[in-house]
Image (cartoon, rainbow over all chains, first blue to last red; front, side, top):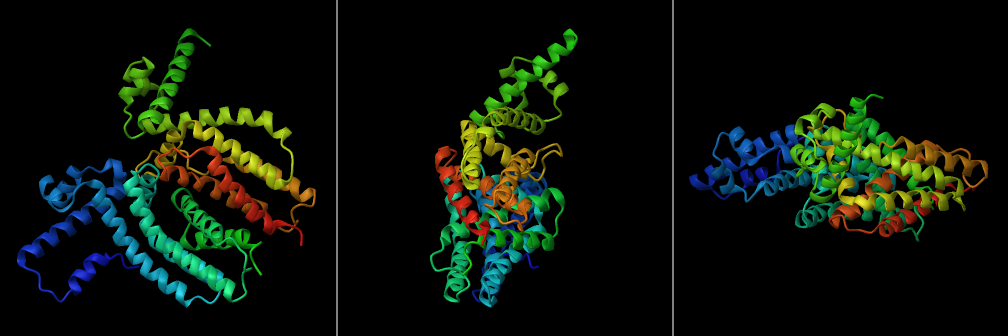
Length: 215
Length: 202
């Protein structure tokens, strides 16, 4: 799986020729992001300070602050870049699916596949999500909203194709699907479950959740 | 038990109580061992002779609270009435009511259990065997009474219910820990209703 940030990719593809100054600035950002990713994974969000990150990136604290307003902005930029990679692949998976089960399992297989390979960073992001500020919460919700849109579309197709009853509570089904998907990461963190094991469990859980909704 | 052991137990109690209150009032990350010692009226050294780390203190605080919660449950469970879904709704409602007495403490516990550099002693969030057993008991009773089909995997149903229960705390986290228990219970009731639709005999 490619972990290349969407941001970085689009910048390199850009036909606009960057000035030497802009290039240097971009390289600084990339170095900071790489160091931060590493440290957040090792120490968690609270445990990694801007000072540590600057040191790991081989620059001054001031140079880090020239690119990022604070630690939370740095952390969110890393998560957003990952999210964009995941989301693009989820759209593809949902589009190619023939049944509701295929669509949902396809979507979440992308998530598990991506995050299980970098579990420490996922852990840091889940940990932060329980105690973050309201502003950070709103920004994170905006990201997840897109995935919920994909789930809602899959449910609607399920209804249209006669796999699901027409009067289902789509919002509730989507939320529960999301709950079990995320809750299962505990098995990867504490019990070392593989992507395949997580998907097998999710598939069983979806049977429980959707049993009453099938046409 | 000798005087020394009595003293040790008393120190332990005081430390756990101080930590519980500080984690809830100012937050887990923000609370230092020094602050816990100060609040408990003991030396920093004596905190460290009892607990290896702050994470271990948190684990003990949470276990202590669960013992308290399940003490209440043992009294209540025999009196739960109604359908399987009704009884499950009550069980989760009691959990939400209990945890929202100290929401910030509970959210801190969840956050700490996911922290990548936490101690091995941290209790994973969601691994609550007492709750699992309680749910299984009610579900098995439902099968006996013909409310639930006999061919279903009850462990899987309990696991799914627990996932929904656990992640409904997101509602509270998103609101800065101010969501009343009734609001989370209302969501849980709907989720239980949805799953119950699927387990009915056909």
